[in-house]
Length: 373
Image (tube, rainbow, N blue to C red):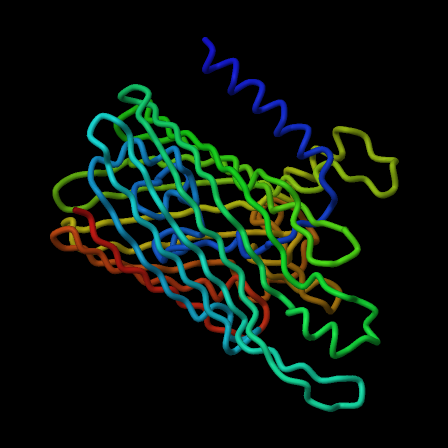
């Protein structure tokens, strides 16, 4: 009973944090999907969480891992935006034999070198920006159908070194181009049937991160992930799974600048604004896997269905495209993700592509390698 009372108090604290948050998050690199396999499923991995990338999506999945697992990922992330930007992920988990599973993971993102030029066009030097997160996780199996887990992470963001402010006093800033914070994650994975998983995770719960000397701070990208994984077909030849998921960025929830919206109107907006994902995974002979995903972030103008409306292109939800009138003409672009993988004797290699989500010209490949032992 004491354990459940503690969980209830913790959830009340989380709710207060969400409602007090400002409208826009910082440390947005924590919102990027790590792992080629989850990316091929459009990020729908909360109800799967069966490898070393589960520490990002749902630490609750760790309790069901019966062996040790390691995964690494590399991506030249969105080179159409920053040619030198790349993203790395490292995850490791180890089962402790009836005492749960521990895990460690690290995320690193850099946009490459940034050249500093003053107002007269004189080059002053260059530096490399980066964001890093290092975390530790623990998950345990409550009973044969339920596993829960928690994570703690250290977050560091290096955007502008202090020497830039000193070299450019006209900016009126003395320091503050780096940010430091920490966060907690919590999740659960429930398996009510042999072919059905239900997952939930609360991510990035921690103090705001500040980048300026003024004391202003941005909330971390606190998120709620809810997902289901259903496997309608499984035999010696093929295993087919379907995974729908919804992700809600909790920062700025129910924000109403006009102050005129009803609660129902604000709730409908929050549901419309949430990220929606659908992943389909087919594994053949336990050797090769193909993946297809669909993603929509309508308020962020990513994914969904691209249509022409009054001479401009807009992203709309799939349900609006199918069931409403006057939504515009189809612009021949859908927010799809693709992936494939090969596995043999514990080794696994996965590749994914999600460049269709973005409007600007870019390639966005991710490659992961993993080993279970």
